[in-house]
Length: 343
Image (cartoon, rainbow, N blue to C red; front, top):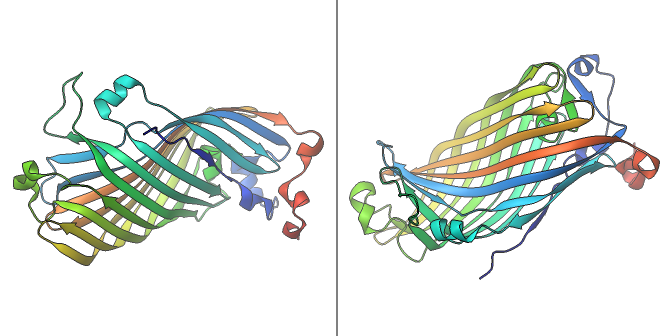
């Protein structure tokens, strides 16, 4: 069965078309906007959702389940003060499929970045994973253990709010609609609400690992819903006016409504564990040219029986772009086409 080709569209800056305020002199010293330019950029992206299993009291041995590939290539644009990205999946090479197996993915994501917030909406379906064991590395040229029967659905929303929009810009580091001209940071508050379902034709780690992880946690069906609010901090370091290094980290408690099924148990329970939102970026952002590498990762930790189950969503992106002076109809904004957005 051929790997699904998907297209994703990112309405990056729609919130900015609603209102503008250029009176803040403090923000003008730290953040620069580009209201008279439109942008174009090629993009290379990898999106993935994976999960790990390890003992709660001893993390020396960990099983990691990962899909193969899910790379995307495409382009982005910023016109009418709204940003979009279009990407198409790239099929892994035959040698990679031999070593890591064949995965099928439908991964639709959208995000909105405002002056002091980021919002990510996603729905993901992955089929086919390969397995790594931290204590048993696989020699080169040998295929990893593969689980084509494992399927996951992951749907939800992630948000992050920055309290100091005058000295910190998330858009300057992740979509380049702004430029950070001075180093600055902000305390933040991140949150998530998502549902996750995993199905497998047989036990997730099999009888081989039952002496390590136990019998009760050897599930073939897992469902959970997570809600979390997590405090954090973000900072952008500006070097030589145009180079930057950005990082933000939020960690907090997460409430999980959990249902799992194994050969010995079918159980529903509520647990309090943790949620982590990590964002890293570095790049170059000048008056016209910009480029950058970014990584966004959210992890949800769930503990039951004697194991810790960690699901992780990641987006790795490489961007190169250029700003052009607006002309003609490109000088208009979304408000000009949608009168209801005007004040």
